[in-house]
Amino acid sequence: MTLKEKILEVMGEPHPAAVATLDGKMPAVRFMVLTGLPDMTLVGGTMKNSKKVEQLTKNPDAAISIWSGKEFSDPYVEIKAKGKVHDDILTKKKYWNPMFAKFFKTAENPDFVVLVFTASEITYHGANMSSVEVWKR
Image (cartoon, rainbow, N blue to C red; front, side, top):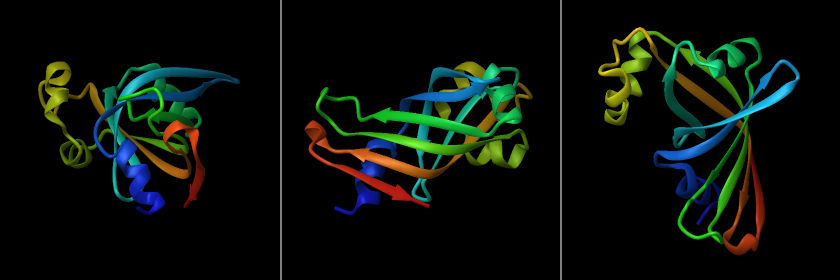
C-alpha cells in the first residue's frame, strides 16, 4: 500500500477531525467532520458566522489531526494545511453531504459554507506507532 493510500484509509471518509486555527496569536481547536479527497484536500461544512470562518479568513493556516477511530493503536494523521471558505452555490452543491441537512436543510442555505483545506504536509503514524511517514505536496 502506498503512503497516499494509507493516508486516505485514515481520512478518506467523513471523520471527526481536530481542526486548529489561529485566534490572533493563540491556537483555537475544535472538532468538525471532514472528508479527505484523493487530491489530499479535506472538506467540511460549517456555519458562515462561526469563529473558524472568521479565523481562516484572517489567517488560512490550519493544523488538523484525524485518528481512524477504531482502536487506540490504529493509525492517525497530522496535517498542515491552508483553509479556504467557499460560499458560492456551485461549491456548496459540489460538496453537499446529506448529513448537513439536519443543520442547514439545503445547500442553498446562506448560513452554510464549505471549508476546503489543502494539505501541504501530512504525517502518517502507523498502527501501534510502528512507523512515521511524511507526504508533502
